[in-house]
Image (cartoon, rainbow, N blue to C red; front, side):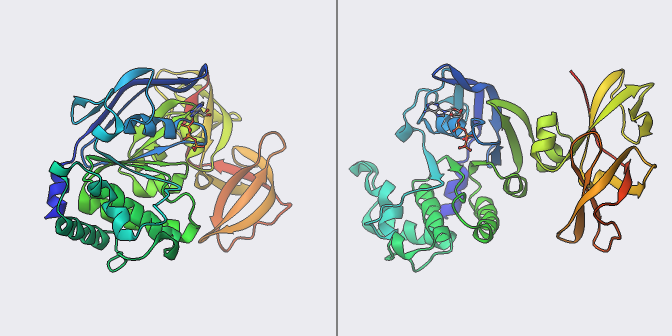
Length: 355
Ligand code: ATP
């Protein structure tokens, strides 16, 4: 079947020592990253962190200053775009407006040289298989203007897959769509990925999207790769304070590591101290790592400055007299009120040595 043919095309990607500078400012610093065959990897980072640049280097649209890109162990660093056998989908992927869905998807096959161009009936068969895969069977003769944004991105993905690429490169493909459609398309992409088994690199600045979709997440910050790991790894064992704070709400506390213990305001916190370390450190806590206790108790003191609902919990905003606002989680039914003084007990957290 077409799907097994696609699976056989699956390759790994290796990015080795890739550096890129634009007009004297570095967009990527010595990036090393491997993507396993058939893996769905999310490149996650804030705006300007270098995600698109790295994806474009993979595609062959931008040339790296140093370093190599290998597909299936073969150096592709100096291969032009057309020879890389990559499929792309961009955020605002302009489908050809004057062409039907069928012609849009078939385009990459129709422009092939005669010798490698499939027959008309073969192309029709392939398009209808792809439309089936992206759940748009029967849409062959529609034009882009007659499709919703989400449907257009699905056609764009079918078009990218039509040429049987070895890898798929997706740059915020759902970025321009509304929240509900984005969520639906996440599940849909996960499903397509499982069915085609294509090695896929997916750029996003949306933490939830990366964590929900990807097999592994690569976190970029100012052109540096901060961490690569499974969604559980990066959430539970962030390698740097940046990864900790970028992946979700986190409150920072001044801490001290002494006698194998982590102290906050002189009180031990139930967090394992890094071995053979001593001195000042930063303890980062998620909202659920902090428990409200009566004022005067706990590791930290503050005043409640906000209460709001978040799903099945309440988020309580606490403003300490000295320091920045932080959030804690409490059950939906809570008697905590704005203006109340409370203490905070630290239940867990992630410790980083300062300096
Ligand atoms: P976003 O999420 O906003 O798209 P990004 O993480 O994809 O951001 P890049 O687009 O890769 O980031 O940009 C990384 C850095 O390189 C930025 O500082 C950007 O201004 C710069 N940059 C990217 N492309 C060019 C270019 N063609 N010329 C000059 N500078 C560039």
